[in-house]
Amino acid sequence: MDTVFGRYQLIEVIGEGAMGKVYRARDTKMRREVAVKVLAPELATEPGYRERFRREAYGVAQLSEPHVIPIHEADEIDGQLYLVMPVVDGTDVQALLNRDGHLTPELTVAIVEQVAAALDSAHDQGLVHRDVKPSNLLITDDEFVYLIDFGIARGEAAPKLTHTGSILGTWGYMAPERFTDGTNDACVDIYALACVLYECLTGQLPFPGETLEQQFTGHTTQDPPKPTDVKPELPAGFDEVIARGLAKDPQQRYETARELAAAARQVLDDASDPGSSSNDDSEPASSSDARVRPQRLDAAPGKTGSARPAEGDQPAPPAAEVTATPSSDAAPPWHRRRPWQIGGVAAALVIGVAGVGAIAGNPTAHTVSQAGLTSQPPASAPVVLPFTGLNGPTPVAVSPGGTVYVGDYYNNRVVQLASGSFTETVLPFTGLNRPQSLAVDSAGTVYVSDGRGQVLILPAGAAGQSKLADNGAEDPAGVAVDTAGNVYVVDTPNNRVLKLPAGGGPQTVLPFTGLNAPGGVAVDSSGAVYVCDAYNNRVLQLPAAAGTQIVLPFTELGFPTGVAVDKSGAVYVSDSLKNQILKLPAGASSQTVLPISGLNHPEGVAVDAAGNVYVTDSNNNRVLQLPAR
Image (tube, rainbow, N blue to C red; front, side, top):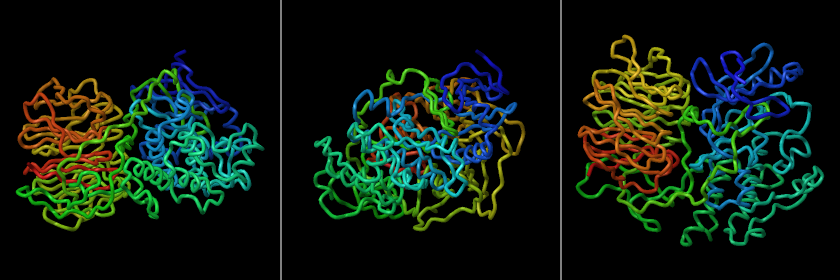
């Protein structure tokens, strides 16, 4: 069709609903494929709709949680409201249920954990999804889940601007209070997520019925069903999780979506470890530790021990106390990078605000394994550094003097731990929004990029920051600095790496080719630049003054996120999908896996002058040091 709509070339219709059409399109300015949703013209004339549209689009656009599809643009052309979003490869959970009947407990819990992260992020911003159901959960081949269709989401305190005054949620997942008094708050999303948990485990809705009257009766009067009545082979603990998640009284439910997910994970862990606390009276993990049940790192499963380096290892700050068992490796990672990384794939489309969710292609042809990831064998222990209160630590950097810097993603701060210190310091950055990359130069100047597309600079000892000059990078997912002070910025959505000369001057685009969602970046003492090419599952090296890149011989990478290089030229990569850290010695043709067990979404990696390796174990909210061997 090739219709021009502003700066977008509309290629084909790939979704259509009562509220508009969805097009696969070409953004002629940014030169990328996108999804453009053009809303029905009559909506723009409905009283209050423009207000709702802009408010909800803005609200969703503020969510940087990677399991929520981002909105690139929301505007109006010739009186037609429209939205622009990425194109994503995947199918939906409903298609899996239609194909398989029900899902394995491992895949089910992994899905619920990721959706919970998206919901809690929205709830923190005062947004309620109101339509959580399997068809609104997109899942990729790698079992990464996106919550889609925030089309009926609205601020809790905002006026109730619902299209035509109708009930927009799907009856089978609606909390009792929505039927009775129209309440819409975070509790209704948690209830719906519990319905999804039940359906994925059993293949049935918790309260079957095809009419509104049947659904009303079930959700408002009947006791929560027990999954084991349908599938006796399921762990009995799921019955208790569903009973609380589907409690009629919202105050009796889990306080957060992550708390529900953590309780489900606990059941799964206890079932896989008969010697665990499945028979005690302990409470499920709270929302604050929903992503992790800590462990002593030097112990094999079921053992105990102290977390300390072996005799003769490099000294390190004392380890933080850790006290419980590791989370299952069956759960795929929660990619903390902003979801610009999904922008170049073109098999399925997810649509956000205003009520349409469309998937292009044949969802039944898309295969998602339910096998889960295999557990890593016990390994020699790293040290847990004494950072406190971390919530999703993502980037990590280390200075020549051994000071460790960590981007505390959900707390919007950067913390440092000086070499030999027991106490962290919060650096005086202001206005951070989801710090996603860090670098530190030889003078101790710290560089941090965040979800607002900015790179902030804080000289050593300074009380205030400055901002790196505008370089055209939309979402700088990676930043590095070399010994000469040149700064390297990864412009993820535009698939390029920029070099900004020390002292100013024109920037250059480094001659990397074929990038698809580049992320982590590093530079060695010779000036060679390394970048994680995430969606191509590879790591590239561009030697200093060279015009041709080299693909490093890492094999079977799942999702490379962080990269570092030591003084010997050895390259380290964090694989957040396979929960491991890889090392490629200089000149080697094969990699080794570093002995760090129990990782859950390792995001950042750094190495100091002594060869100690630092890893942000993001979903376990900790930073590890593997002493030099």
